[in-house]
Structures are given as C-alpha cells and as structure tokens.
Length: 321
Image (cartoon, rainbow, N blue to C red; front, side, top):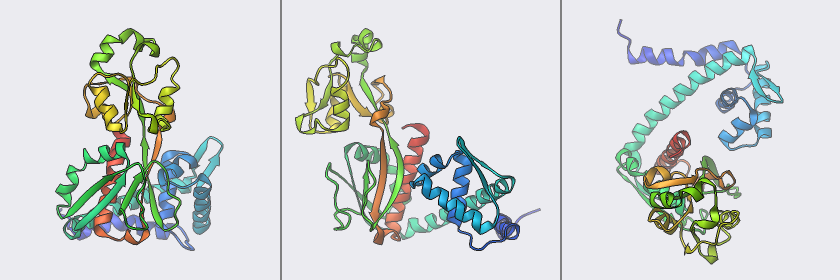
C-alpha cells in the first residue's frame, strides 16, 4: 500500500509521542537526551564529554538533571565506564530515533539555506589547517554557490571581536566569553620522507638510527614550535640541515628528497610519494577548535561554512585523511 509523505512523517515522530507517554517529565531538554545517547555510545563520561567539548563533571551534572527530570535512574556509573539501566536503554533507543529526525530536519533546512546563504565568510587559521581546508573545500561551492570563502593564513590569531575574521580554527580553545566554540577533532603528526630517501636510508630508518639521516625543519625564529622541539630532541638526530620559515616549505623539502620532517598525517594521503618513518607522534597531537563571534551564529552563510568544516573533520576522524 502506498504511504504518503505525511503518514511517513507521522510514523517518524511517533517516538517523541511515545517518549512523552513513557516518562513523567518535569522538563525535558533534547540536548540532555543527546548527552545520554553519547554516554551510551562512548561507554564513558570522559569519552562522551570529549565529543561535545565539555568536562566530564559538567556532563555528569547534565545526566543528573536528566535523571531528576524523568524521575528514574538512566545510567549505572562504574569506575570502568557507564551502562544504561533497562529503562535507560529504552530511552537511548528513542533518543536515537529522535536524533535521526533532528538530522532530517537539519538536512531540510540545509537545502533551503543553499539557496538563502550568500556573501563572504573569512576563516583565519594556521598553515597546516589552511592546507587541509583549501584542498577539501571544492564541494562546498557546489552546495552553496552564492557563498564566497576567504581562508586567511597566519600564525597570529586574528581578532573575532574586531571582525578581522568571521571564523577562527586553531589548535586551542579560546577563552573569550562572547565566542561560540566547537571542538572539531584531533590533528595528528608523523615523521615522513620521500620514497627516494626511504630507499637510500632503509637500514637506518629500520633501526631508527637517526644520526645518519638528513632532516628538514623550521628556522631559528620558529625553533620553539612544538614539532621542531620534538625533532631537535630526537635521540641522535642532527639539527635540520634545511630550515624553513613555513610548514609547506618543510613539505616541499621532504617530498623532494631533502630529508625527514614532521608533517601533519593527512598529507600522507594527499602526497603519494611520502613514506612514514614514524606514522604517528602522539605527543604532537593537537585538539582543533572552531570559534566565532556569538552574534554570527544565526547567519545562514556562517552556519553553512561551520557545518561543512565540521563534516570535513568528521570525515578526517573516521578515515585519518
């Protein structure tokens, strides 16, 4: 039998009606239900808190408020993690269905925004993140043809309060109270060289005999960058014989056979001739945060860019590239 769009929609909103019937609510906040869903998915308060960019203590308080609102315990908390109660598991299923409905509403809104969004959006970020964005932003223009994007690269962060940029993407969380922030993910780094260098120094690389291989790094004014401090502390490694004032210079030197250098791991998939001597250097991991002025949060063009950047980092987190 044919089902109309209206009937299909009624079927989808049934979980919301059932949820109201199932629990006696003082006040129920969808954001709190989303927190419960994340706790169930991640298995720990800490893991769920990382996903939304809050502390575990804050998330625990939100969970307490939700349990008080519904009048029943939703999650058993143990030292090793969290397990939903029988009642909590039922609510998690319903919250998941509500989440799917919310996503469908957002997709409908996005289709409307594709026509409504227009104007210029300026993004300020550092060099590696600038490269990450510029090599992945072509799809955005297909979806939002009336939005122009400027990606402004600088080591010094631009002022969002003075509207030097609309959006900032940086490896730290800003402290200003008038900013809206969002954790995007983690940028990782590795030690790479060209295929030619990997062949010529195969024995040294296999034995991590760093003393006998050449290196590329930052110049003296940038020697305090975290990646360069790590490189200069590598046991036995000589100082970089080639030094650059910018990260893409290191990429150029490494990819053309000048030696080993520290690079963002997403470059390994973009540059097919790169070989990983150390594919991941955990101590160089950077948490990446997006921030924007609170007054811009309702702008269609800003929201389009923010959502697209979030999608890019979700894809990067899932695939590592």
